[in-house]
Amino acid sequence: MRIQRKLFQGALAGCVTAILASHAPSADAANWFKLRGTEPGGTAHTLQVWGFIQPTYVKDYSDEIKGALGGFGNAANGTLPVPGTIPPDRTEQESFFLRRARIGIRGTMIPVSNDIDYFILTEWGQNGITRAGGAAHLLDASVTFNQLSRGQDDDGLANLGARIRMGQFLFSQTSQALSQSTPGRRVHVFMPEATFANAIGRYASDNGVHNWPEDEVGANGARDIGVEVFDWVEFKNDWFGDGPIEITYSAAIGNGDYIGELNRDDNFTNYYWLSIAKLFDNTRGPRRHDMMLYGWYQKGDVLFNNDINNDGNPDNLPLPAGGNVNPGNLNTGGVNPGQCGGATGGGLEFACLSPGNRVFKNGNEKDYERKYYGVGFEYFDKPFDKMGQMRFEAEWQKVDSMSFDGPQSPSAAVNDNVGGFDSILYDPDGENVGWYVDVGYDIHQHLGLKKRTTLNVRYDEFDRNEGNEFREVNFKTWTATAEYFFHKKARATLTYQWRDFSADERDDPPYKTNGNAVLEQVDNRLGLQVTFIYKNVLLR
Image 1 (spheres, rainbow, N blue to C red):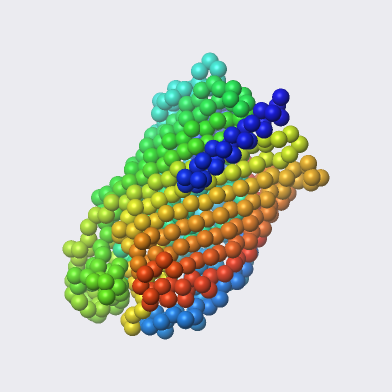
Image 2: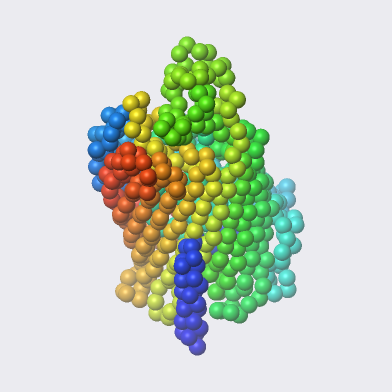
């Protein structure tokens, strides 16, 4: 009977997945609002130290850029494409480095209140978050007020209420973003610079002429500063096992800026999440057995200057199209750096560099509405007796308006005697669409292995600046991963990526030629990583 139920469960999960995939694929798992925002009831502690480290080796097989034309070609030919180098420094193709090293504390605010939880996490590794200054950065620092959560009913199921979280933390934007700081779930040495997940986790500003990789302030890690109202409710249900149906909601408002900054433009971003999950049994945590369907949405204005040199031409378009793809350089020409309004119209010079991610204010700045949204599906369970656990994740995502772009590819890669590296790197009216499918299988004992081994295959596709004849780029990435677990909190991960990047959808021949001169040199990548997770309750 159990086998039949599990077979039916797996078949249904596959049908639902196929329906979603045929319409638009989807993403990740577990209840990350519960796991990251609250402490488990009945086990309150005042201080728990936790975190993980990931020593990593990477070898990139990309070649140097060749065949680019004009001033861009003069500057780019013979150099490495940025996606063909190792982050965060982007200077090497083979290296050992510490990809992530995170340490945090979490607990309950005893003796202040048994109903207030806190969560703090810092990053010490070598990645986009620590790039600015090379020092450790504060990722999360939040408190959650649970006074309105309403506890459980007589069957031990959660009642619907409201929990309030304030501070700096991961807001509801893609399931992958919510899960990325919890290594108990993710399985890849996955460097996603050419995926939707990377675009949503990096801040876009008009400081594009000096943006990345040389002088970028850093990635925001999908964090924001603000306030969130969330909770979940459970309903008794015997469909596919003894676990309940769980519905989770979240509504939040944040600055919409780079973490650590105040609200630089008087605009805010709204975040929303809604999911429905079937729990198959009593497993909990990041590897609980469940099936979940979810959707997320965020919307907010961003202040952006698309005419920094004040010449009347939009900076994100090339001159033949009525714009000025290269608005100028950062030489102030003797102008006082504090005078940020005196740009010289029509020339290559403009007054000063905006500090950090601040907007360049010369009267041409204006608000652009930006919307991110997506839908996803997740399945993780052991559907067959004497077999291992199986996992399926899929997500479809879209951005209306500007998204983080990057240098060379997918910037316009201009055929311009002035040079293309200083191009404004964003399309303020861009359309960006991405999706991925992620399938994994846990081998454990049934094939004679004493320790769990995971096999995983993932496919990513990201169309950036879709429909833009000068800037569109298409990224396709296959990722194969094998993991061996020494312990449930220690594992080795081997990853290989096949990358196919293209500018073939651009209509203008010089921009297609220069785009492909960069993108066609991006080749495969090998990675080896060891993950150690630690957790220690110091005080109770």
